[in-house]
Length: 125
Image (tube, rainbow, N blue to C red; front, side, top):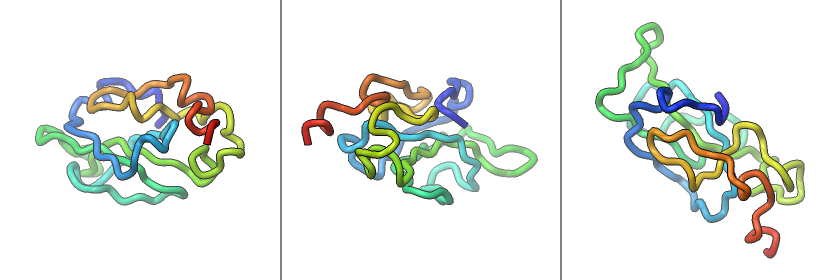
């Protein structure tokens, strides 16, 4: 899924767990993944690294067909700005990228000038 999540996709989110310092990340990619558990660190099967995930509340029900829970995972890929500041996303950002400072439980996150362009903090480094 992309950053175009709706609040109804996120209704059972209880908290966001960050695995890295958000000051170093202008943006994160977000996706809805299907996982076996609602409240532990999910497996990560992409390139790059997981930088956060959502824990679901006790009312969250698994999909009746698969038995899996849908929950958000936040990640960055090797060619993203934090790892490759002069790369393809030196300016701009991928479609599913949002500013991690705007992410809260039950809120989809938003694109901001910081997430879409190179931040002043990184430009001065």
